[in-house]
Length: 425
Image 1 (tube, helix red, strand yellow):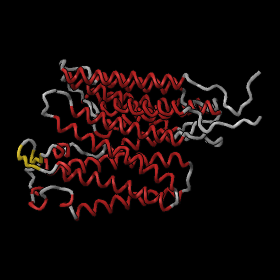
Image 2 (image 1 turned 180 degrees about the vertical axis):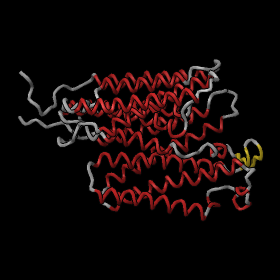
Image 3 (image 1 turned 45 degrees about the horizontal axis):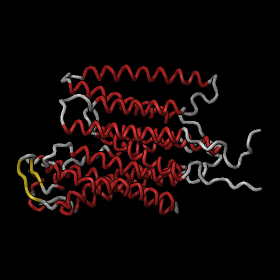
């Protein structure tokens, strides 16, 4: 009797579980992204690291079940850098627009503005955040490409960014309320200045994404282009829809509505990445896929993990009102020296051990996730007890426990030998 191999190493229920785990843990990753000690690009790197570790862990499980090596390890770098790049843009000024409030110099000079302007700009922020990450993910999954292709990709992205900046610079009135009144030229209107600067950085990233998207479409990489667009929308929609939480700032129930917004983004972004994982792993990985993790990726993982720990230390010290600048500088020097030493030891060991650390063991991936979770609690626990803080800690705990249980279920819910393999006797 002919055995028909299964198309995926995961059952449909497991695929749903993996998607939920990426979403639930994403709520936690994105919420701590904006906590004390993080914020901006460093906080985005932390969120990217969490999703990258989850992706690699689930991918390794599927590869083991299918009897094939894990897919391209560059996916780790793609998620970390893709999500991290989005953190280089600013968007805080637009949350007031959602409430219908436009400030010349917050909290002074408030004017009413149409709320849709805030929702629209938040959508654009999410579009570039997910779009650039989607581009990097698509490239990692596409496999090796020629130098000519990489030059074309980079040139398309740079051209897109330049065109986008040129467009918004020539027509700022389309994106900045009350621009015709000249209020953005007055240096006293600092909030207006922030909005103008944010518009340039956000749209430069949007242009970067659109350039990457156009390149893949022109090359005939339809699957990659569609994936990039879906991931972009998967971040843009919760970014915008979640903005509704900001309208509840004056509600009688005193919760951290900003954190609710961040958790909405993390949930939507995580579910999107979970859906991308599902689409990628519908079939077993090809046998030609290499399983070794390049040194550059391992270095990036180490840096991202250090950024996570460093931010937690900085956040705790800031809460204790300790001047941490000298300490953090010393810590950076020590870690740099240890990193250089580790690099040379790694190179020396590699001469005698073939495949030294060629694969990331599940224990190391789980340990990395554990560090992120502990650091998140470290920057959240300090502070006076309040209803909002207690609610936040309860949600954090629920996210971590639910995501962890799903993770353990997938790890220990194997199917045994691949269907096409003969049963051992």
